Amino acid sequence: MSLSPAIPPPARSPYVGRLAPSPTGRLHLGHARTFALAAARAREAGGRLLMRIDDLDTARCRPEFTAAALEDLAWLGLRWEEPVIVQSARLDRYRAALARLHAAGLIFPCHRSRKDLAEALSAPHERAPGGGPPADDEPLYPLAWRPPADAPLPPLDAAGLATNWRFRVPVGRELVFEDGHHGPQRAVCGSDFGDFLVWRKDGYPSYQLACAVDDAELGITEVVRGADLIRSTFRQLLLLDALGAPLPAYHHAPLLTDERGVRLAKRHDALSLATLRAAGRSPATLLDDCGI
Ligand code: GLU
Image (tube, rainbow, N blue to C red; front, side, top):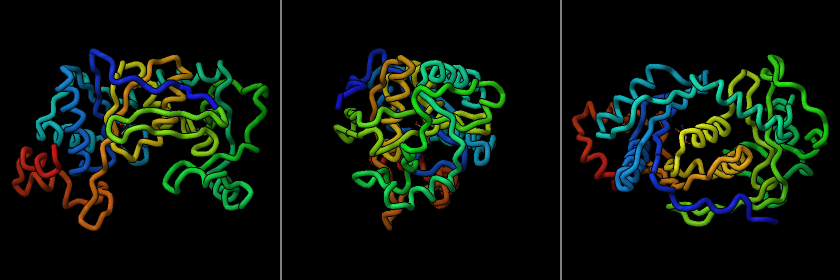
């Protein structure tokens, strides 16, 4: 097993960070804390801070949530560079990256449905050694479903772009990175996660591909985001490596939970920034309460 990609270095200088809200609902206190931490780290490093709107989930994203997120974060006192980067306006960049992965033979078309995958994974012999990814992660794609590595790939024409594509992970390779908050992180390709989606048949990149392309092209030197995305980092490291991009440093902020220990989600309306603001809370006391 190799230790490649290498452990990403500490944030390069000059520092470039980003805030990347998904406009699928109103932001809550947990977002405020993560985004405020990202802004503080950029400020302390004397660096730049970009704003990226992750609006590729067309079923759940709504323009009014983008406007609301920008307003809430500005109210909180965060400042970022203009122009705001909007993922849905960058589809040509993601298609170009997909074409590079295709030319390098690193992806394959997948015609299986989520239902096929769920059925296959309920068969005991398909379970990964070591248990595989946790239930809230993308399920482990059966190796038996991969086309042979030398099978010719269909072209990325209109029909090709209306197909799901997966990244062929280097089975058995160990990936490691040093998280700025959680310390050393490790995963083995093919056991902890499998061939993952990079392109969806609705014509959009997966979050993993869009995020890796943007972090590379925008020159992000440190990614600060919630700890729920630690497992995504391994996939993004593989994509960055495949695209020949420098690897950013990573700092995953612990997630806020409510008084019952349940992770804050956008449905916790009582803790939405809009509600807290309407109740007269000030940005300073909010950030103080969550330890920023
Ligand atoms: N848009 C993602 C979220 O709100 C964050 C993605 C990222 O920081 O890479 O959870």
